[in-house]
Length: 300
Image (tube, rainbow, N blue to C red; front, top):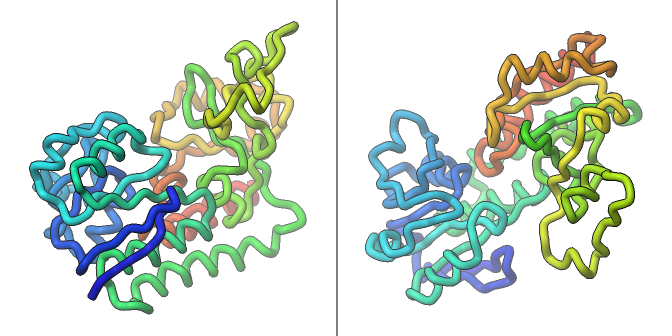
């Protein structure tokens, strides 16, 4: 049966039937395809697609997320390529489209977006509507959301860095930040957009930030901040993910030296970066684990 949906670029994506040969350029989408219809349908992935671990290695790698090997992908003759507006480059997507390849581009920025994407992916893969696995994922998210309602008036204020040098974080317009909100936490940098140029982002005296018109379409969701700015925001807890940057115990000690509630309460914890930033079939499990971790940090 023919399948037609609209992707994140506003394009109509049409398939005559459920795809049997899929190339995924997004780690979380690779994991989702494997969990929904099996690894056998995957004929290509990126170097960073590492789940399901110990099984994905049989699927050929086709470069990175930012530098896909387009020629190799085309040679694999996929029925469908899965891409993401943030993870992959428009250049690679355009080259695949020019080669006549069907490409679906996603861009979930909230938990609701992620659940909608999951429904879309299931449809693209020919999974029966109302599949119990998809419903179970939605139910897990709802339980996490219900658990967080008890703290709606006083969410745990958290700082989540995503890179150390330079120190970077995320604002409220990201999936990771919205997942934290869903689990009962508040991103202390939710209102802090990235500024351009660099000196303005780091608040160097006398340097003016570019206007919105000058910034144009550049992504402003990942600000660069200083340890002094983290101290000013006074987080109650600090979560250190292991990707995209693997925060070490030495990094944790640097944050523990700050005069902030998180340090005084010993509320600095390492967390699974995949749980924070991978959407798709992982979102239900991730919401449960993060809810438990946030509750434990709140109790310190």
